[in-house]
Amino acid sequence: MPTESTELTADTDLRADPWGWWRKKMPISQKWAYLDHAAVGPLSSPAADALRKYATEAETEGDTVWPNWSRRVETLRQQFAAFLTTEADEICFVPNTSTGINLVAEGFPWNSGDSVVIPEGEFPSNLFPWQNQQSRGVQLRVVPRRDGRVDVDDLFAHVDQSTRIIALSWVGYASGFRVDLETVVHRAHELGVLVFLDAIQGLGVFDLNLAQIDVDFLSADGHKWLLGPEGFGVAVIRKRHLQTLRCGNVGWNSVRNTFNYAKPEFDLRQSAARFEPGSANMAAAAALGGSLEIFSAIRQVHGPNAIGNRVLTLSEELDHRLREIGVHSRMPADRQHRSGIVTFDVPDQDPAAVRNRAIEQGCVVSCRDGGIRAGIHAYNTSQDLERLVGAIGG
Image 1 (cartoon, one colour):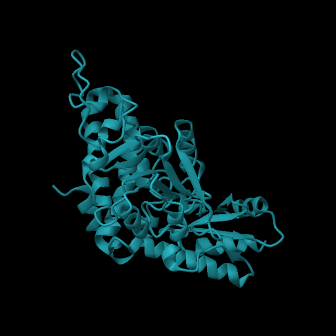
Image 2 (cartoon, helix red, strand yellow):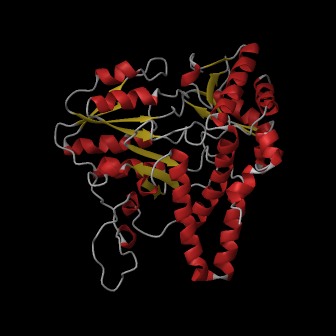
Image 3 (tube, helix red, strand yellow):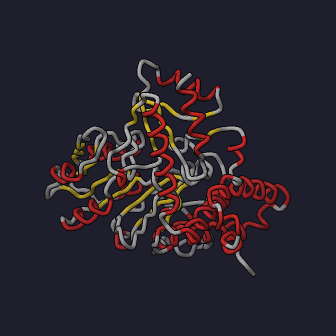
């Protein structure tokens, strides 16, 4: 019997017009020019359908279908393993990016005098957990950015023999700057330093092959670019580090013999799933799995870089349209550092006022870092961008 994935990839519309095919699965596009994926993305129709199905089953069947829900979680684990080119045993589901970061920050075997290096301007989720280790004698080194850019040489100028981890975002939440991740990982590993990646602003848009770019730890929520619900995300703990991290948050689901309630034995799973202490968010897992099918189908038919290239083309189009009306964005000069985030400043206008005017004209953006931030996805269109530009012009 064909799987949902094979049925999707056989769709002629997907092959002929992938972005139009995708847009039909985004009901929000009927009302809004939605350019706020860097904040909270809208649900895709497959995600919403999965939520409705779960609610109906829970209402009418109760836990008689619990085994099906549980299998769906494990299917999603396999999906993410394929999506990231890693092993399912390295995939851990978390309620949010912050939890995944804290798994590493709190579980790492720190010694007093150790150091962590992060870029300036990280989202608080990738700042506070490392600051929190200062009470254990860990030094946090915050490396200044250069006009919003993360300079790799600057990062490593702050690395020395005490440095255990470099923690950084793949894409800056306000700047939109995408780091040269392959170079960071290669140089870090040459020095015996581990790399933690906050992947939330890039995962789903840009290809991340962990077999080639050997990131040590990763965390990302599913509610932004992956178009899933809030409160469910993915983390990666490489198997070589499984015994390194202390599993501080444990429960019935952390152990190998999961359902041995009468004679429980504290024998942790030999996989990243040991960090999932209790019941999974079954509804959110089903929904995120529905959205992930869209991304996987596009990648299978059009290649792993198709989504990223589409997003960059639209981002560059917005930058060009803004320049035509005298507005300059903060888009990086080099394409390899660009992303779906385009932050810009409108001369002599309050960012909140611009955002509110855009909302009134059916376009959704955010205010970040003193500017207006557009988060452009692959299913967006030139017409969506035109609506934003029109709102800016008043």
